[in-house]
Length: 368
Image (cartoon, rainbow, N blue to C red; front, side, top):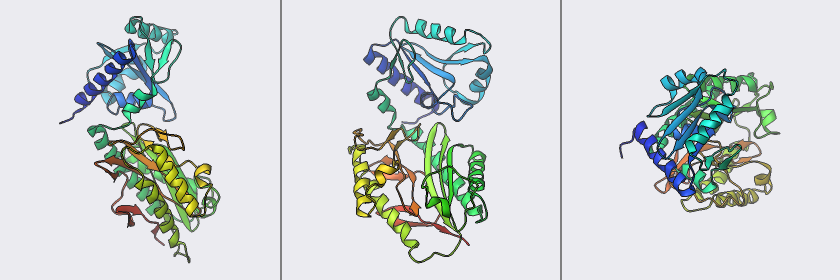
């Protein structure tokens, strides 16, 4: 199928209307920035990166599809973000009864039937979990956009780490990475940076004013078209000490156990248990309980976190990002499960790497 934005949106509108029929509902209301991006083929409905709900919503009925917003945002959204044939319902931003007017419009559009919602308010029904899961396998155009996001995110991380100096603070490294992301048109969901001293104590922590010292660890999640790509990279500023090179081999061997379990049809919990067993084998039996390990990725990071009881089945088209860690080392990339194998969306071909279980995996960069 030759996809374009209009065709992708039409496909999703048909999917959403199928949900309305299935649930005997009158309207589907999508408030969250993640669902807004999904429904509009990657548009952003928010100017605040920390907001769960944005300045615009999607409302779909059996015979109409609306963008609900206010006059302060409508022009920019129409000209720069939202494509496709939507009907715009625009309310004056200074209207003191804005929320009440919007609720009245939604209920009128639903014609007395229930309103399904991703983040339900009063008189709305929660979108069932089974329907929420239908967005996890990504369409071909979503996968293509994801590849662009992953490529740019990995290039930004590489740029920041190659420019870093041992006397930089963790905050300076994080700032350089955020700047590299923004310069490529990506939003920084988070940027974690740790130097030699703090990484020994905290494997994933916000950057501090501490100097990097002899090594730097950078982990990030970048967003573009609503899709979240995560990765981590490490750099050493001094020659490797005895045994330090073994840290890369150990973490990559552990990660390979988890990645090998990422097979279509397997439950996500199988990946979690594979990691649990791998940690125990390395003498770190409690690690899987002490640190989050990642899970299914997509319009949120993660969409579904891996746990002992997450029985959702992996499917072709799903994105996956795991971040196993051991004392002194960590690794993460975002993969697409497709055609029976994992495709690395955040691979930098110029970054030093080793082949582990047939996959190109990042090593610690050594630049003095």
